[in-house]
Length: 147
Image (cartoon, rainbow, N blue to C red; front, side, top):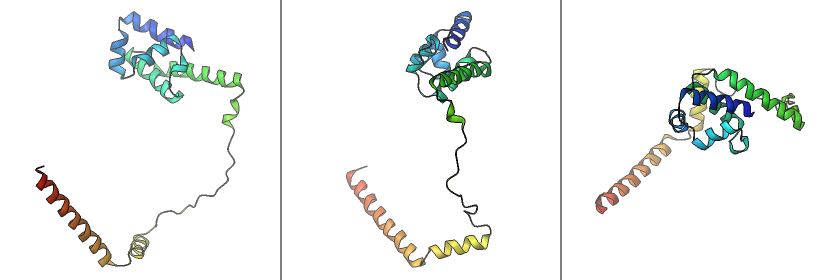
């Protein structure tokens, strides 16, 4: 994967852009940019971030990000295959069924479900009154302190 970093570094130097300017333009920390250039993938975060870093870096250098991301993906696949971890693409057996109907379908069902949830309007009014009383106490406290 060193090849990707070498391509990006060569293009950056060809354009005469400093690593600090790339950092400013991409909002990617300089240590991550340097790690990409030298191929030190262990210092980088998760793969999804690396793909984003490569894409942003390539766009700043007026390069095609898709080509570099494809190279990175092929290197990733080769590395996983060498480690014997290429079974990640196997389908997962479904163990639970998902209910097809979560939300009410009609307005009347919606009204029925919300009215069933409320036992009494007076309870809601009491809760609001309690909140307003607490709010008034806090307001008085802060006005007393001079805020």
